[in-house]
Structure formats: structure tokens, C-alpha cells
Length: 130
View (tube, rainbow, N blue to C red):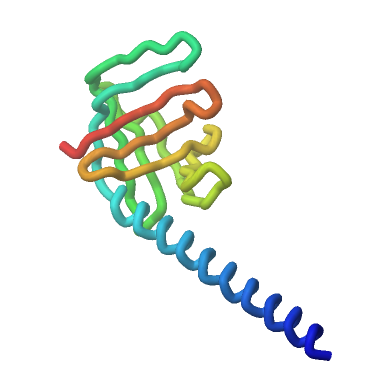
């Protein structure tokens, strides 16, 4: 009977500890979403990692409206793409889901926004606040 109580308490503790971790993940995605609000100008793009080419500068910007959960991808000719976005927690980290694009890893570091598809040998886009 004592062994049964020990196993039961162990299971309860494990469930409690796992639930604490999930709330941390939720707060992490909320923090990233609050930080990414507003307009970001492209700083550089590192494209296609097997034959990587880095392009600095450019006229591309991305703007996030975190209240409506929408984004606009803009260049000098106007809006290239717009739509809804979502932030999820994936196996590799916090993921950004944009319209008609595969999920990208997203990080906000100081005044830089990193949108990273390089885990699939696609581009790594680094934006900076204007």
C-alpha cells in the first residue's frame, strides 16, 4: 500500500511540473508577440544555406498588428502580402505562421526581429526597427 501511495504521489508531482512548463511556454510566445508589434525594416537576408548568399539592405519591411493578429509585407512598390499570422510553440522553438508560407522560427533580440526558415534550407530574414 505504501508503494502505491508513492507511485501516485510521483505521478501527481510529474503532472504538476509539466503543467508549470507549459505556462512558461505560453508566456514566452506572448512576450515575443508583444515585442514584435509595429514596423520592421529589412537589415539582411541570408538565403538558401547550401549555397548561402547574404543580401544587405533593401526596401522590404514587415509590419505586425498584434491586436488584430495581422501582418503586411511591404516594399517600395506597395504591399506584397498581407494576412493573418499566428504564433505557436514548436519542437524547435517559437514558430511564426504567415499566410501561404511554411512555419518559421521567430526571435526578437533587442531591436532585431529574426524570421528563420533556414531549418528547411530556406532564408533567414533579419529585420531592424526603423
